[in-house]
Length: 207
Image (cartoon, rainbow, N blue to C red; front, side):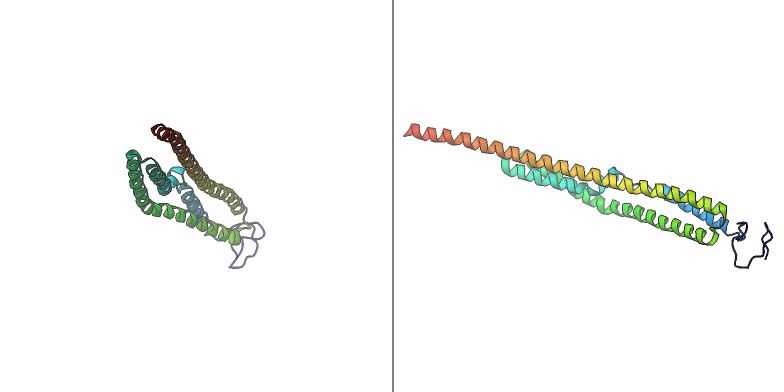
């Protein structure tokens, strides 16, 4: 078999002419089309947002609120905080239900992204191994490699950002809750110390 471009003799298994880089095998167009489709599908996968991450893990926040309201109820005996604790319990249950229903969707989206990433990498390896000597293929692979790197980086960056913001929200909630309980406990102790001298004085006057 001869190369249609330079006329060099080629073996039947040759896919790219080693002399001029002409692609002899017409399957390269199919691979390039598949590569474009796979990359487009990868870009279309919805990124991880803080709203979605919060929705899946809001039960932790409501659980903290439930504990805080119960502690404050025990410290003050106030019925309002007991009602708030019951509300936090309901919200926590609702959030858990949404986690188990929506969590599967989120996991499916993440699995789809990883599957498309592997698929794109596989097509790129085939093109590189079989048609890497062709200039047009090398240029396209270089371009796709850059695009793929940006897509994966953005996807992972969105997920890391959502996790960091969520941890910050939990940390602030815990800090405010602990500070509120400590202040409330200190106020009760001050009231107890003020009441003690008054009681002692009342006893002495009665004597």
